[in-house]
Length: 179
Image (cartoon, rainbow, N blue to C red; front, top):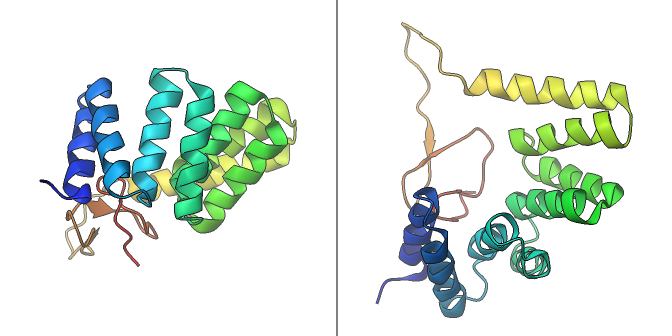
């Protein structure tokens, strides 16, 4: 029997291959084996949210992910998206995205979400601009540059060896904490 981490990696790959029914099935196996697997709950929530439009089930999954790990910045971000898109609760979305970037200051997606929120919903152009600038700075730092000198060795996940972004503590691919 594969471990929860091995199953998580299978589900993650199935999701990347757009096999969402299979990914959902495997994520459900993961959380049955390990009910505290925060990233599995988060990713399962995203399938309910994005693929099935089952928002109440998505919300339950995000809440469970955060009960398992209150520092799961992916879950805070996704909970913000749910509140923004489906509930139209812009203040809650703002709180969740601010929490996400507090936990992971280089989380491009959450800065982008804040920029859109401030620009179109809350109508705070200065805040929108600052978030957009932060997002662009992160994007520039992620862009590989040609350097004839020795480049820094990328930080790899301790479990699956995926490359992590600067400051990233949770591996998106396997869900491992990398502190």
